Length: 489
Image 1 (cartoon, rainbow, N blue to C red):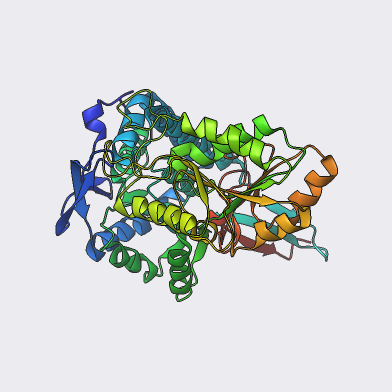
Image 2: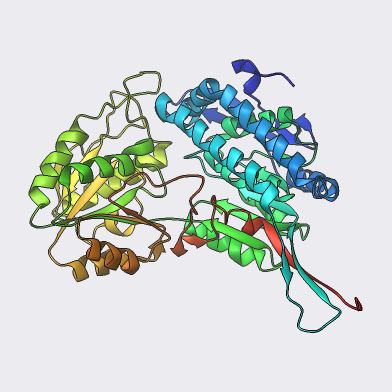
């Protein structure tokens, strides 16, 4: 196994099925640079035939892979982790090129992705079962944890390395095999990671990846939904798509992990450290240009500190450097595509039309390129505005004034979504009241950076179910087999 591959060798433009790179799809999907709109590569625009071939390979490999000792699976995952980190610079550049985030964030994402691979390499050897005390003499009772089978992973474009690692690493650690469909906007990073997994020793058929356009993705995924051999779907993306997957999975009773849409509140109470709250909001909101599932979408600020907080925030946001990843000074890159910029612009225009005030930003930055939008702070936001009811997924902070704890908790929970929430205050009694009252799967208290491989990541309500990362991260890739042996006396 070579320690490193060249930057050119990392760029793969074919499907990976049963240990082979294949480009036998009927068409091609262009991959473009969101900073310029230029085409940088093309990958197969796959269909049901490629999806079924991947499932065939995964099913055939499962019989062998599930029996590989956990320590050997762990060793392969550790080699994969080492290779990912050895290629951190080039993988970071690849992420920045196809996804648009600044290079420092791209390299940071690689390290974040590798942390999940390393974590689950260690968890692979800890899939302990249970010995159950028998209720009668002469009997031994056991609960064994076994891999569910073939897993279909469907990943988003905003974190093309981290989402692959967070789904595939636990699946492989558990003894499952995988078919994967990466996002149409960012397939190159996913293909590079699969290449490195192959280099690390993942056997043919254990990990398969199929690329497809937005138009052809339903046909690819339907092939897996219809296949009873595919026993689990893991998906990160929109709630409407997650609901479709849940409905269709019912036909074959697949196991599901769904990390879906968010509408995260960020609450600043009157006793908050305002400087810390501003820094926490900057970290939570503007990472990846606001294109994260846990970024604050609604910011509630107590009336006693609202104006001071708004001034401090506007000063920080107005100083952000916007530009392409090729500029080392860039802190905010382009949005992923035209649809993303149009939604952000619509939200800002709707808010202004309903009385919101733009403190900073509020417009496209056409001189930089087609997909840039200025980091924006709005005041006077209300629940009637689109930016309050829909996930903006961009660098826009709408501020809403509040005066009462019960009022702001009700407003924070007034959404069908429940992925993440944040709040800043110093009163320890209030901290636990608010943490208990918020209807989300993740809560940040005086902290804006929440994600870690050791933490359980996932939502409640219409933000989905299942958890990724942490000691609970293997659970959705396993089932429990009860074994009872009698006549032992």
